[in-house]
Length: 67
Image 1 (cartoon, one colour):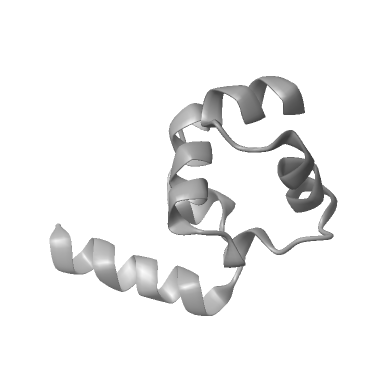
Image 2: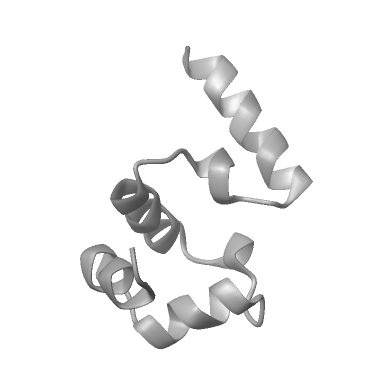
């Protein structure tokens, strides 16, 4: 995907997506709705795009509790 295509399909602002990609804005701190839209378009899991170790631990605990 290009940034434009991803932004359009995820229904998020391309400028915001650019800031996340460049590391100028922390994607881990994005709204869950934004993160889930990107995951849906990319066909990936939350843990594939989240970098924060504390958040990853919570995701792992959630996955374990719901499996």
